[in-house]
Image 1 (cartoon, one colour):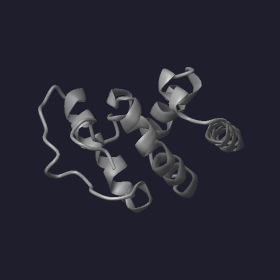
Image 2 (cartoon, rainbow, N blue to C red):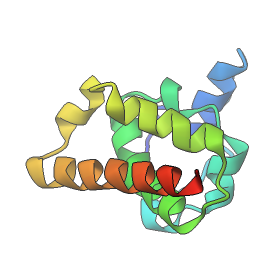
Image 3 (cartoon, rainbow, N blue to C red):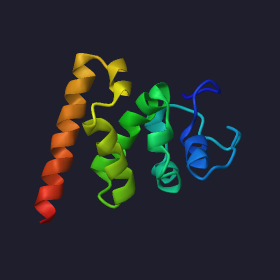
Length: 116
């Protein structure tokens, strides 16, 4: 769970809009229970997350993208850009987790190629 020490996706979204936001409306719980609607309504948040927030939301984002082709280009592109750019936030992941991220990137690339 993201705490007051780290921005949530709704706070990161607010920062993208140059607004302030507290965590009163944020999802509270495990990433596995995070509704996809949170990503849809906070689609500009990913680049504004700190390392701990990025790592907290990463598995939920990856699952949402794999399960939902319609999640939206902005969310997927934003995440893939963050992963492909050798994001320093990825330093918090172990080798096994980095391997899963690599497989996820390959999956997204194959799915994108199949559209053409």
